[in-house]
Amino acid sequence: MKHIIGVIVFIAVITVALGTWLDSINLLPPLASAEGIPIDWLFNLHIQVIAFLFALIMGFMLYSVVVFRRKKDDTGDGAFIHGNAALEIVWTIVPLFVVFYFAYLGVVTLNDITSPSRNELVVEVTGSQWNWRFDYPEYGLSSTELNLPVGRTILLKLTSIDVIHDFWVPEFRVKQDAVPGMVKELRVSPTETGTYKLRCAELCGLDHAYMLADVNVMSPAEYDEWIDQELEEIAKAEAGPALERGQRVAELMGCQDCHTLDGSPGKAPTWLGLYGKEEALTDGSTVLVDDEYIRRSIVDPGAQIVDGFGGTMPARFGDELSEEQIADLIEYIESFSE
Image (cartoon, rainbow, N blue to C red; front, side, top):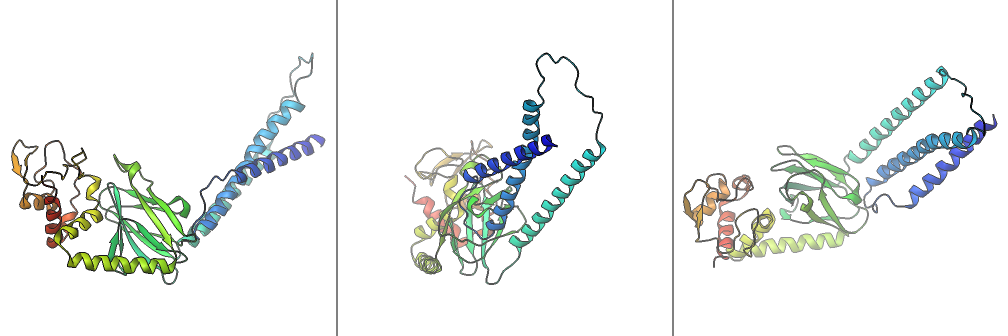
């Protein structure tokens, strides 16, 4: 009996010490969403169970090594134990119920963080290689940074135009795939103002590691002010010259992710000196880069591919951009001609 009590005390001490240490080293980034509260609770519960299982294994082993070590001049064999049916039943049934309990907690937590709430703000998120675009249908504007008001539930409607991406802000805890041809939903209720980093958590190609975007969580008053400023900028751009409108289109569509503006190499031809240039194509012919060629490259990017490039230009722009936006974009590209 003394050995049973001794090993129980030893395991308890290891469990408490290990659990306390794991709690103190900040395994998770700062919490910044309401959905993260039950997630962190469940994560910490897992950690405590893991600490106990580690202590259970190491405790028995270390206790046995120290207490039941072979005595000096003891050359006999230890007692042969064939098995213990009761013990085997216990260590099968108990873990089974623990797994079922954690499955139940997972279902409850998932239901809690995905349930709709009143007055949700809808933001449409589009992932593409390798950038993010955010559309706010309630206000009719778009941005390359995600701006959110604190204390309000945000319904993110995610999709992708090429491959599978994944929306992940570590401080929000929740994440969701953005799948081509589908709209996936993710709810998040920011609780702390500040700037966070959105990352793609699904390996999506060459520049996967650089598929980042800022997430700005602001007070409701600051958010309303940002909306007003954006609407004012849109109205000003629409009334301004085509060059400025084209620049805005290029920024929203993520054109600079592939096309550089300074002549440096990129995943697609640089825009510096491109307009009016004779380009060699993959089929051996040449083409003059003029309005018609640029428009065709936007609407049907696979028709005439510049030699040394290919397969990176998304085919979606022909559907997403109006004729006026394409004309504005051509004007912007032309401004970089030498």
